[in-house]
Length: 307
Image 1 (cartoon, rainbow, N blue to C red):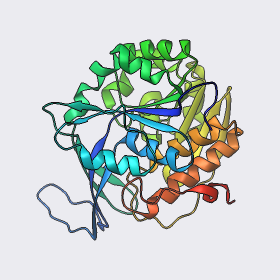
Image 2 (tube, one colour; image 1 turned 60 degrees about the vertical axis):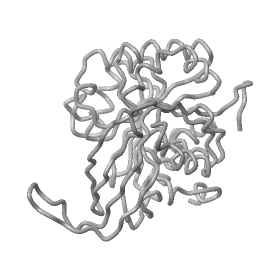
Image 3 (cartoon, rainbow, N blue to C red; image 1 turned 60 degrees about the horizontal axis):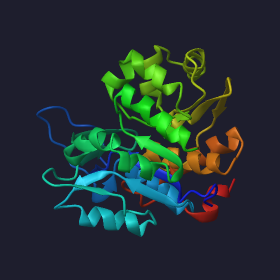
């Protein structure tokens, strides 16, 4: 699939975690309460990891550019490599362990308890010329981390000069989402991937149509808005598009948004029309919830083209 003399289709950069997934809770326990889950699984997680694995399963030449703990990285790198992702550019932190998240989920929602570990060094590495040179080897870079808007703007310029496009999914980071400088940086980003809650915090709007209009008024070009069980919406070239969800019996929603990103980017890099990008993204996000974590149930091959 790789074209334009680039080594990779996509390099994903950002947060990586060892996920301890506890699922099947009837309700979320409150403070001082105890609840038992039905299932437990260890999985490679984080937006950069899950999106990279999804793209690789769809046939993209994909590499992972993250920071992990030197003493505990072997299992995670092997897991990602088994999905077809190149791990030769993964950096090792001498003292911090690989970041860890405990994901606690019901069938409809989830909560995360996180130690950022080696991820804390990411901003320093993003300013390193060797990392930037590596990112320029891809047709597209997907950033899954809430870095400072000034650093994001600088990174966009570096990548665009090399003919590399950039998408961003920061997840829930209230300070970043409320930062006025964030809007200036996002004007230069090729694709922004917020979920409904994140977008509502940024815009002060609650309906998908008015959320997208607020992004359009601010000068953003392409925004793929994740609406969970309600599907998704897209702002592209000033036009808004809504897409229905893909029906699925959900087991665990961990990583579904990152799988949505993978599906959308796969379609977008293949020059599919906006409606098809949303359809494939919805399908990938939905089908990923059939298994625990964000990787094991991600669709492969012709499954994304079945209508």
